[in-house]
Image 1 (tube, one colour):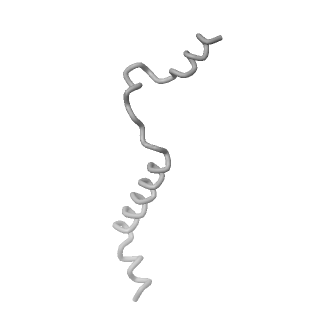
Image 2 (cartoon, helix red, strand yellow):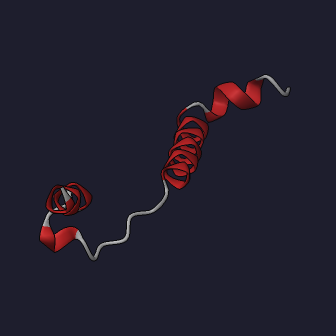
Image 3 (spheres, helix red, strand yellow):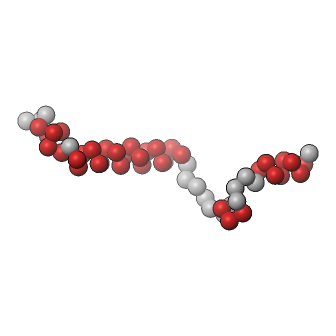
Length: 52
Protein backbone atom coordinates (compact mmCIF):
# COMPACT_ATOMS: atom_id res chain seq x y z
CA UNK A 1 0.00 0.00 0.00
CA UNK A 2 2.71 2.63 0.71
CA UNK A 3 4.03 2.25 -2.84
CA UNK A 4 0.59 3.08 -4.26
CA UNK A 5 0.40 6.20 -2.09
CA UNK A 6 3.72 7.48 -3.44
CA UNK A 7 2.56 6.98 -7.02
CA UNK A 8 -0.66 8.91 -6.38
CA UNK A 9 1.16 11.88 -4.88
CA UNK A 10 3.47 12.38 -7.88
CA UNK A 11 0.99 12.96 -10.68
CA UNK A 12 2.96 15.71 -12.41
CA UNK A 13 5.79 14.88 -14.85
CA UNK A 14 9.27 14.90 -13.37
CA UNK A 15 10.33 18.09 -15.17
CA UNK A 16 7.33 20.01 -13.82
CA UNK A 17 7.68 19.04 -10.16
CA UNK A 18 9.86 22.05 -9.38
CA UNK A 19 7.52 24.52 -11.10
CA UNK A 20 5.35 26.53 -8.72
CA UNK A 21 1.88 27.21 -10.08
CA UNK A 22 -0.07 30.30 -8.95
CA UNK A 23 -3.33 29.89 -7.09
CA UNK A 24 -6.45 29.58 -9.22
CA UNK A 25 -8.08 32.64 -7.65
CA UNK A 26 -5.30 34.87 -9.00
CA UNK A 27 -5.96 33.55 -12.50
CA UNK A 28 -9.66 34.34 -12.17
CA UNK A 29 -8.91 37.89 -11.00
CA UNK A 30 -6.46 38.47 -13.86
CA UNK A 31 -8.96 37.08 -16.39
CA UNK A 32 -11.69 39.44 -15.13
CA UNK A 33 -9.33 42.43 -15.30
CA UNK A 34 -8.30 41.54 -18.85
CA UNK A 35 -11.95 41.17 -19.95
CA UNK A 36 -12.85 44.56 -18.44
CA UNK A 37 -9.86 46.27 -20.09
CA UNK A 38 -10.61 44.78 -23.51
CA UNK A 39 -14.27 45.79 -23.25
CA UNK A 40 -13.29 49.33 -22.25
CA UNK A 41 -11.01 49.58 -25.28
CA UNK A 42 -13.50 48.11 -27.75
CA UNK A 43 -16.66 49.82 -26.47
CA UNK A 44 -15.18 53.10 -25.23
CA UNK A 45 -17.53 55.31 -27.24
CA UNK A 46 -20.63 53.37 -26.25
CA UNK A 47 -19.76 53.38 -22.55
CA UNK A 48 -18.95 57.10 -22.45
CA UNK A 49 -22.12 57.99 -24.39
CA UNK A 50 -24.19 56.86 -21.38
CA UNK A 51 -22.54 59.50 -19.17
CA UNK A 52 -23.40 62.43 -21.48
